Length: 334
Image (cartoon, rainbow, N blue to C red):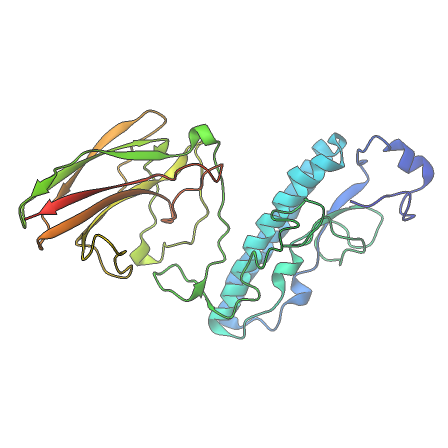
């Protein structure tokens, strides 16, 4: 946020009227003009681009409404509760516009740089319709060292989007060597983060003998599953329900281990895999029985369970020293 008096944008009385750090009612959200920065939009992408441009306008309008209602809470509040969330939403829409054009034409460059908005007096150029280029310093610089107002500030962040990536965009299907632009989404409080445990399993089974695993989950609402085989992989941000619990599902897989002293090859398809989305789960632990029809090889099997958000990512934890929601057991197959 700028110093209004110091840059001459407000008179001394206007500045003194807001000297407690509040922003007056004669202000609006000003964002860079996205339309002016777009290349020629291919006809096949026009409808999707127009929908996303309209969403950008709706986001600004909503931010303006909140600014009018809560702008008296001070510049720190406006920055953290209005401008930063708006930038995140705009960045996601700009990513979608980039992808839409890239599918059928040359990939537009630098759209993510248009995500940052600011507050300006309503009598200043630019207005609140996203049509003017901001004339003052943005509140944050994506990935930059700006005094701690952006995630990773001062840590030398190398990238927080796909703008400079040389890889193709990820498209929701299970392909590697792609760049995923979907923002991670909502992170719950530590006490609400999901956890799970394999509570019952056999020590030994026969080859091709059916058996069961009992799995208990906590803080995982098992109601969200975007089928990876239909393009639902890594395309949706993580979501919490009204109680702050992760909406998702959990996976179960069993694979045969060639060695007990070296990690297995990561690309091998497991002998058994299933995702469980049964509409149950919540804050209290409950149990699910997984039916496994049998494993075709003799040896040592590693059976694992892990939580997934709606788009198959392991749910995020509030702290780095929390154990994510996964568990594994070894079973001997004769």
